[in-house]
Amino acid sequence: MIGRITVIAAAGLVVLVLLVFSVRLFAADILSRGSTLYARETAVDLFPGSVSYILSLVDLRRQNDLDIRRQLRMATQADPVDARLFIELGLECERAGDYDSALRYLLESSRLSQEFLPRWTLANYYFRRNDLTQFRFWMHSALEVGAPNLTAAFRLLWNSGLTTAEISTVIPHTRDAVVGWLRWCVDQGRLDAAREAAAESLRQWPGESAGVLIRYCALLARGSASARAQAADLWNALVARGLLHQRPVYPAGAPTVEDPDFSTGPGDLAFGWHMIPVEGVVSDHYGRGIHFRLDGNEPEKCDLLTQLLSLRPGSKNVLRCRYDSTGLLPGSGLYWHIEDPDAHTALEETPIFLNDQQKEVTAPFTVPPGQRFGILVLRYARPAGMVRITGSVQLISIDLTS
Image 1 (cartoon, rainbow, N blue to C red):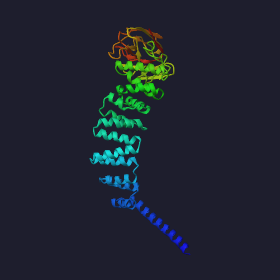
Image 2: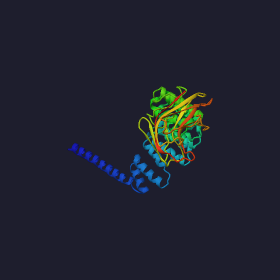
Image 3: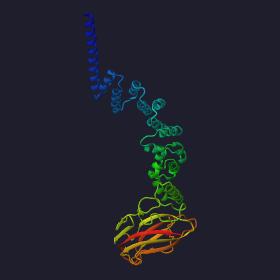
Image 4: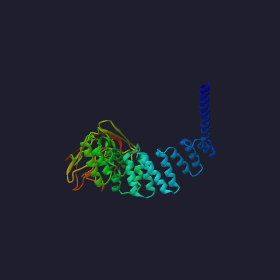
């Protein structure tokens, strides 16, 4: 009998403890969502080891512009392996001007977690403290770990004041970092900063970086003479590796017109056709050939189609174009033009006008010594005394022979 009573009493005590615990938990849960500091502080007092209740109090104190460092220290004591709690505490200490404590907590977060966030946070901390040596160390470490999106890291790295050479030492030799940095530079038009990353991407990860390398090549082609030379070298490297299904340009091949029968059509390739939208001109690409219709309202002077040519200095060449047209009188003003991309002077000996009486035009031109590139342009310029063209032209093919 005594044993039975003891068991019943023990069971009742357990039930009572559980009931009290449940009531306390229910009350704390309600209080942790309360709108007053007293309510949330009471929830923490009821369960001082609950990180969620502590952080609920932290949120309300933050909303009231109150110091939250003591509460965050409580949270780190309740969960001493959560790196994010140490990051938040470190940042609060920094905001309060307690830099020694801030650094201690941020370093502790990097010890607890090998992920990107603690290292990225330390890089930002040292950037704000103007300590570029430690900034470079922790930025390199963060990029080495990597993250799904490194845009913010690359932007901070660029804005740090480091030289392009110094930045190259910060970028780790990993695929995500190198190809990601190349992509960011291309998006931002930072061509010089992308050069080493482009070379390494092509050498180590050609398949993964083919798209951004083709974009980089196109940007180089629009730059200075030296940038265009880089574009030609990169173009030929991409073609040689089968990453770009076009023909090599000079010096890897003879000077030529890319896509001579317009089967690929206009796009954004460095050495391909570029269509220029013009009011009053409708253009169509049919897979083979390009068709232009001019309605008589086109500008008095405009470029319709261009291509950058890689040429042999000092060479003599002949440009030949086959086409059909209607409404193009002799001397009506539609012609092929080859010009120096820097000086914008003509390379052809005479203008290569298109008209209905011919199906093919040819024009010789000589590349000056030291000249590497020319721009081939289909241009319209209304001659004095002529009305604007109302007609069309179907370009069938165009080629270049030396």
